Length: 166
Image 1 (cartoon, rainbow, N blue to C red):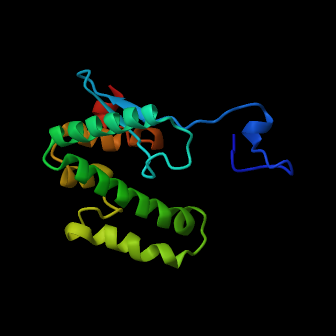
Image 2: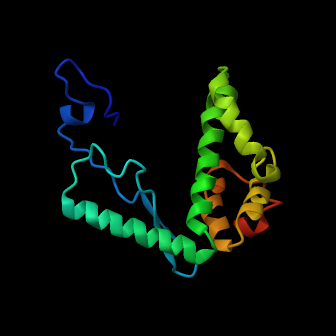
């Protein structure tokens, strides 16, 4: 439901249908093959504009801190590396969506895209295989799995990814 759309009453589409929308925090939890878990998807705005109680905010902050410690336990500076990877993904999406998918020239997004692509001697170059980029950025197999599970939704070449297909 698009909560941004409203009619003349000033109510969102969700409100018109009697729905109360509340952000799910964390957005998801990753479960690894060995049973290890990491909660992810905490808002960067720190719950601004949401109707959370003080107790809920404390609980969210505690979960986020546990997530940060977990990421740092996977490899040195794990949380920082993860945040930098997400920043790279955001820059690639912000530039790639309008310029390559929608075929609409968006020059404003190009400098950040180029900066991320060339960062750290082009480790993040977007035209290389995603697995090559991830292996250059992360040493932990769990980080690589965490950053690559979405590839399964996009589609993989089965002969080059035999382990993924059994």
